[in-house]
Image: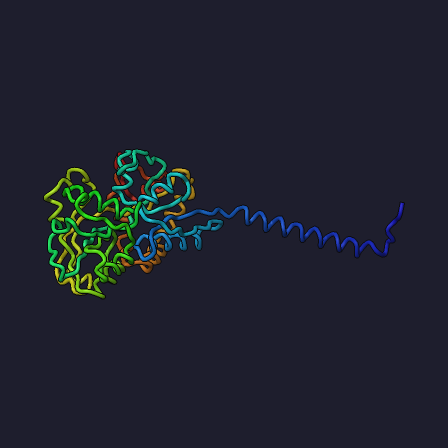
Length: 335
């Protein structure tokens, strides 16, 4: 048996200590990495209001919640977000109250699935319908769109779903030619006269509507008044009357009375109560709301007071805890 000379022991021990320290550092780094919880926030199409909100919340939570990393996911919009969150392909989403209500009850268009894994965190902003035509096209009323090409948003989006509900309530859906394209593309197509009208279902002012109105003289049709002639109020009572004030868009010097759905921050039932409570606490802190208000003008509607506006489906347990602490009273439908 070979013995190690005494004079070499200090050097050998030093090496062993160094190796041990390196191993511990590697293990520690791996532990930190393993402890990072990665979540997905499904937003909306590029240029749409949803994308600004989802990206803003993703940045806020990743910055302020230790061990949490939230990535922003592009999406066709509300209905796709509903499906993604329900299947756990995303953890958070933005979904219209109407889509969520219909989805939970198995009443989405051509879809009888019940999306019961999706719950509400809070109201974010009202999403009014914009129906834009070129001012010189001779179209002044919604009924005149029969036989016309109307851009309604990407297939699977909340905009397209809302357009179908609206035009069906007026018996016009089978008479128009819906074009399933995004807002920015639709604004360009309107200016190039490739389409006759553009339906945008988003908070105002909307960037794509500004794009259309800045490049062309446009007219916004009176959606609410036309809707009274159909069955919208009876079939879809979650739509509310709202006014887009004159001057909101270039050249539109009159109030536009339209319908609105509520865009909701939604979350999967699988997200823990503790994490959801912390997430709501961050976003609805004074600092969090200030940040969100800087992200999008429509975020001015995000307040503690308006948190449960338009919510007619269950709120996540973690969010419930937060809102009750803030003095909110939940309805039976929200529990």
